[in-house]
Length: 525
Image (cartoon, rainbow, N blue to C red; front, side):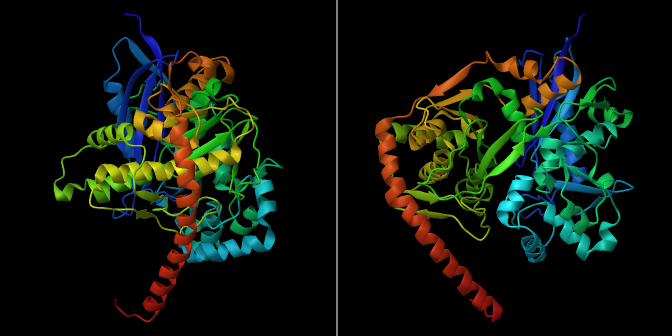
């Protein structure tokens, strides 16, 4: 029997690990998904959206190899996997000692603030951003390293290797320690002018380049699956493993031909607006925190804005509307069907949501900010809360979209991620933003992008251009915005959402100060 080659891509997400297998034309062969939640060390935390996520590295590997084993079982016998690459969030780092035991890199916020002050004395925010592509702030993940090295030197001197999450999985597959640009540079400590680690960071942290790892492009073949990893995953030892990349850049790679001259939006755990062309700072909008990142395609960069995204729908499901301890039997499909029916019948709703449950990234980072539901009434139910949540997230996406859009009348929003799977969610977003949406029909763009990078490394494709053009003829779904609804949402945004957001920030600050006052007094309220 002739066996056909196929490519495996793995995406390590905040909510789940996805393993995706496709042929060299991008056609899906199989897919498996396993929840990431057991890998979070803080089991009481339902979801971690922070830049430096506190993962149990070995548990994360166990989840990944489970996803690989599951997806391999679904592959028809006439196919064989020949390559694998991995995508992940960029900024989270994992550290191992010489015996491959994990050393935690999660630092206390109090000490991070002190380290931030040290960097502030050396760099203005503009200088730091121009050098690294990242704004300087307490959320900059490289600060975890320099703070810990200065505070816990005896512990940190044992660190032998520091990985991005995707490079850690590659290490578990091959025993090769190498870093790819797109995730390595997302620690906010890469000097893009000199193409090396930032001098101040290196001096401040005392970390050697050897510990940080040699850096190379994405889609570079590192070796084959080790015998140990072969036993643990079911992958053949003949499978070629290549460097992967940052999750949203892998997603962009998978649909590269669709995003040209358009604005790219990923609605996942984090909601991202990315442009690979123009980036005009409109005077109508406040200056926003933006990030300049390396693409998985060498010598290409992107401008990205981010906000907390679909993590808030997961939070809503787990904690508010369908918590299993109350024995609810209502599924997300039930809620969305109810939203769909009401959205077709009624333009308006009274409920409103400020999407800052996990803090805020726009216009600046503020982890002390909190979310708010308003307009609740006797008819409010789980579906109306979900609709308000989606609308609130769409309002923050609109602020980011308006900030980066150019003057082209034919700009479209190219949408992938969890929020692209539901037609009503897409329609609400199109109506709020006042823009037509195109969604390439890819089940998991980040994992598919990783699979294509694996194909580059295994020489299935001659270069990045050939690999990224595989999906040019991919079918897409389209959603046209309703101008009448857009006008309605514009009024809600200007006259309700923005004024409420401003007032709530003041009130939230008052709440924090009062709580702090009484905590300091050790009084129980």
